[in-house]
Length: 221
Image (tube, rainbow, N blue to C red):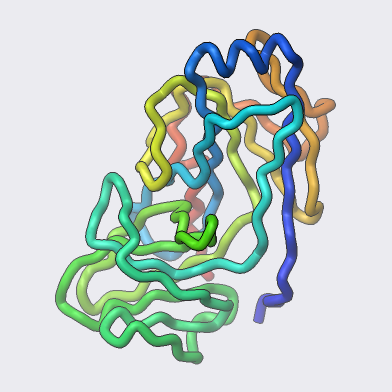
């Protein structure tokens, strides 16, 4: 079984005063999306973090503790229920309870009803669940997931809302790999884009890139 020890992660973003002024005056948002591995088809990435609060140094933080969520909505996910889940556990939609006996390298959600839902993994954000992707969960089916410690950052003027499905990049993004590291430091310039020292853990993502193949990885968990 995959280790379930809690690990904390952080990406620090620095910007110049000129860029800071441009971001604030231009109505930009800093958006974060996160990668996920799954056995389920039809999934779509969801805006995980969105903020308009800028500073010369900003941090995106999260831990390895995740939740399984259920929703009755699709393109803009409103979480109906969520619960902390670990590897090898299964969440029952009917009872809302966790059980063991699931895939050792995954977190599973079992729809033991005949109603269709949306489901996936989420993180706690100020006491509220913040989904990272949305997957169809049909009646009498089970979806399995595993978080991937990769995050996509993007400053954009697109009207972004947390929980909203986002299918393509509307500005240059930076895909950051935090395996096996727990911290990364990057910078952003409003004209020249992202910088990270050219290290192999970073990859620029051009505007108009389709995000589903980038952030949702089908896997035999």
